[in-house]
Length: 241
Ligand SMILES: Nc1ncnc2c1ncn2[C@@H]1O[C@H](COP(=O)(O)OP(=O)(O)OP(=O)(O)O)[C@@H](O)[C@H]1O
Ligand SMILES: [Mg+2]
Image 1 (cartoon, rainbow, N blue to C red):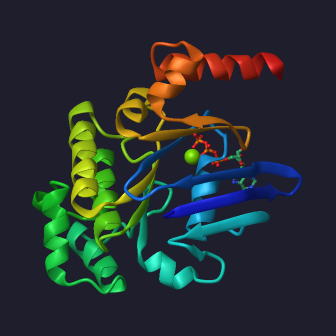
Image 2: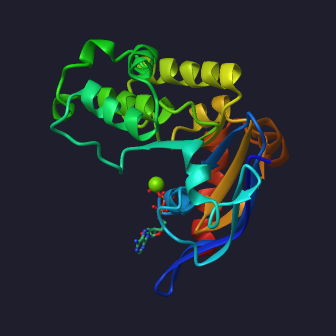
């Protein structure tokens, strides 16, 4: 098991953002974490990256306890999200070079990831001048620098136009085929989640409501697509509240 999460909980004061969740990811799997705004997706990812400390529960990555083997594990992991800012006054190339050095990668790797994410033409542009889609691709390039074995992607395609988003998905799939990369993925684009993810975990108010392969979930609930399933669940929950 690449990722094994048991009873993970995060409380902020007396508010429970993540409530006793248990899930796992198998090698090479793209696991989708979905759920409405505030469901606890980002909080979960932040705990998996050891950016915030869980209130309770256990996280094992590559078979090791994250709390105990933090540094060794994080060397083999990476993430992309828009809530972490890259230094704005550096150029694209400078930003990637800083991170390449942190990960102990050669300069050549910077050239490779810029090519892979189609940002080579932006190498000398200051990061603050990038459009949000260009910035997203820079974040993804940074996330792939160290050839991670496990990648956490929090809404990586949110600001991409449909064509660019499609190219990014194809690229992520290609990297997965080539490197056997495992991914935990969040998105509010239901078509994307249905198409990209091998398995989905549906979070709501910090709890897992259900999980399974997209096709299996649709068949079980008798709905046509994931968008319909999402709406149905969100509305049921709202009526219960
Ligand atoms: N530092 C914090 N202090 C207090 N509450 C927090 C903190 N961080 C997150 N929360 C709350 O925890 C809940 C879960 O937030 P989280 O960001 O994990 O949701 P999310 O599923 O990523 O939502 P979105 O789809 O909007 O990105 C929200 O109600 C949020 O307000
Ligand atoms: Mg979020």
